[in-house]
Image (cartoon, rainbow, N blue to C red; front, top):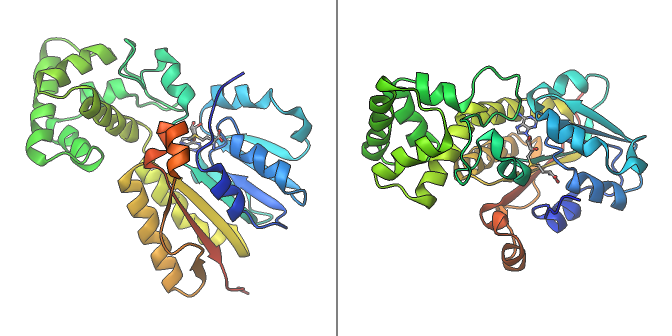
Length: 291
Ligand SMILES: C[S@@+](CC[C@H](N)C(=O)[O-])C[C@H]1O[C@@H](n2cnc3c(N)ncnc32)[C@H](O)[C@@H]1O
């Protein structure tokens, strides 16, 4: 049995409208959130659960058979949601961004700098581009941009990291997490800072920021009138994107912010689950009936 703490579960449950019928979980993972929602809200007729990682989805399918009649498991990126919702709209949509703890524990996939493995970091193993391709093929300028944009390092430091990578790979490709970690150590980055660099490479590998923007652009058309969308982020850049997007939507008069500010995880939750310390939850509601 997988031990897992779904992040901000109480806050998510409180935000789900009590009489919704169709819900979409954009990032099903091991469906801890979805399971709790289904157990609480009996009016739900259908739950569309997306995940990009086929291994996670298979793992998940085998559990909790009592809800199989309500769930559609969809191996696809959440950016494709409109294709699956062309007949009906969603009453509640949940997005829980980032990685699953299982990604870190599955040492062969290269998400964690604590295990020596091939540089990979793809959620979807059909994705052509892996962390290996980024580290070995991106130009010095492109690598610098990844470290500035997603790790929020200064340009000077990002250039230093990019330079050592590009210099090293001239002799031999950088193949493993430990090889990359050793290079980061050489420019004075230890565990915490190296973790941030690994996270930046993962974000670039899976195009996480581009996907988030695409998904938000679809939001107004896939949500039913009067219903809600909740998003949990773990990265300040993602939170800023969601915050600004929700703010703009609320200015349009078609949407209303359910909470004026993002809700953080409670102190008690952070004590129990350190992964929740950077979590932020924002919820928006569609308020206007369109023709
Ligand atoms: C933080 S976990 C979700 C955990 C889930 N809420 C639960 O209760 O178990 C995020 C999940 O999103 C998936 N994911 C990442 N990018 C995705 C995308 N573009 N489309 C669909 N799923 C994605 C990952 O594979 C991962 O399983």
